[in-house]
Figure: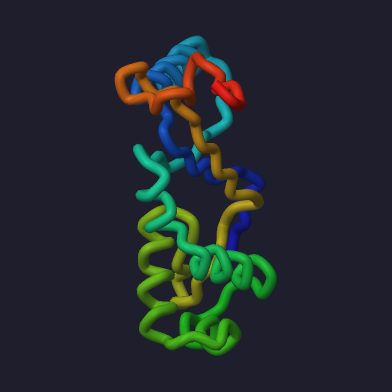
Length: 142
């Protein structure tokens, strides 16, 4: 089992252009012969997508694995007091999103020293803004 001293970056709302610029800068650095720190991450367009992938129960699962170390899915379900099938589904999804890895012996673990969630707040266009919310102040009594 290897716990990387690296971070899994979970981002919401990062523009594709920003991710592309970061990748291009990394490729330029590699071309110059510079050593670059790998960046591991998953990006979601909307917060609802991230919340569907990383539910509160899945964060509990991640925390339990970080505390206990590698476990079988059955043992993890027992420790969490949850149904095996549901825990198995959650583990499968977290593997897909890179938050959990399955080891050669079948146990699962969290290989990251940190998982950082970064949500970009976007400013709505003026056509979609609610009256009184962007660019104006409501004054009591007016």
